[in-house]
View 1 (cartoon, one colour):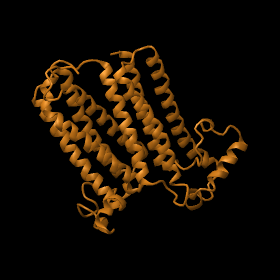
View 2 (cartoon, helix red, strand yellow; view 1 turned 30 degrees about the vertical axis):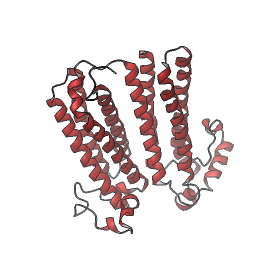
View 3 (cartoon, one colour; view 1 turned 120 degrees about the vertical axis):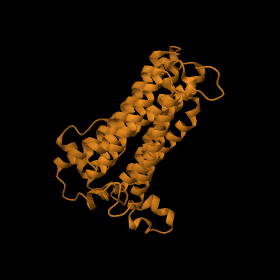
View 4 (cartoon, one colour; view 1 turned 60 degrees about the vertical axis):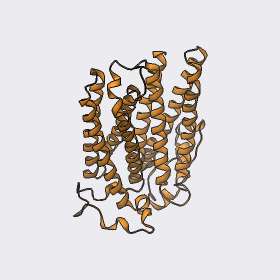
Length: 344
């Protein structure tokens, strides 16, 4: 396998983290609805003169967000929210180019084996789908409601997570064989898979929490929610199951529960893995996973107690992606129980 292909894929995965962080800032500053059109080519350039800014602002003034939330906003304030949405879209475009152009070159120079071409092209198609999904998300806040659908927001984040994990998976494969002694961790492979699922579920409800602005509720208390372990209004909707998807208090409670469950599993995974006495690289990977899980819990609590401070909340989202990266590294380096060799 080619190391240069691995480096390219690792770089693209890092680019995904940057793009999602700008996306988080865009959401937290409520800037995502500032651009009311989707022009994949023309939209790469921001307004370049005062007339163009006035035209762009006039289009925004027709949106529900302006009419219901930001009526009377000045052009200067509009430029601030426009910047974050424009930057987020620009980074997504650049990420597409940073993935596609080297893919073509590696393909033509024969550095990609035949069996790896379909997975790599599949990642590109997922990226194209992500662009379309991002526009559908924005469009959901341009018709009557002044905010995007929290379901589409979660889907947008989850698709980014899938693309990120797929890039890492392929990068690890191109990077070379597992380190020696990796077979020692085979007993915890199923636990790693469980941890990946829990991180994904926690991120999903984190996106629901952000989309419903539920993070500002009960921000002064943890682990309690007010004077109780769970909020009294968390079952106010009917049927009951709607609360866990639509009720802000219940959504935040669910996010907290999933986060605690994820933390417990990650601690158990790290402890059990270290007890198996793996080789030094894998031991360091398990220690890093344990440390990142602790940091992520701290960032989550900090996000609540600071009433969703932009810096803390953005780092909290980055922490989730770093956890996923560490888990993907473990999955790559741990063989299936039936495998007899330490390489794929």
